[in-house]
Image 1: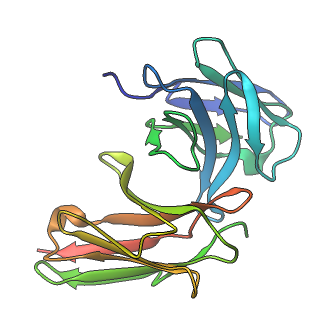
Image 2 (image 1 turned 90 degrees about the vertical axis):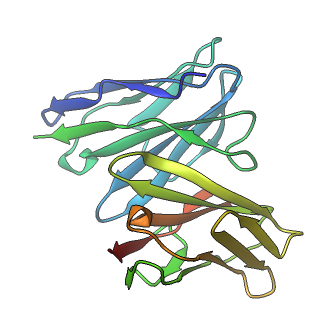
Length: 114
Length: 108
């Protein structure tokens, strides 16, 4: 089976812009979760989607949003970018639930906000 | 911080030695997972232990869970240079949380 893929791998944006990141889960996996990783805050949970519905949400401002399509592919969007949004964004897929199943992570998208 | 506690923050050992990492959390959980992250392979799942299990093994890995102390430990036996990585615990107690991680360096 192909692993989790994320596009793009690297992205440079300026403050105030918006960005959309994409994630394709492993075939047959219905849960997709997103995480932000920074040196200062470590790995933080953004949200989880299951069957096109947001199941869980972490403690992030409304500028961070996501969605899931009927084929389980997911996108996350960050609007009005701030310098502090510079991070590695990781997507993970699991069979049914990030909380109870193994999560398979993609390589991440490295976002730099200038 | 949203993260659980992990200790030590960093650990440096020689090949062949054992490495133990600890994770503590604050409320009850259904299960706890351990992940490894290195630059070559990204974040990889190692082992999942459920709240009704006390110990679980996978190859050179041994994980214990003490729900009364709200803590888990990961033991890597006979470490190898390839075990050099950051190790994170992950659990769900109303929200998904990763521990702060332990940076393990295994010297050849």
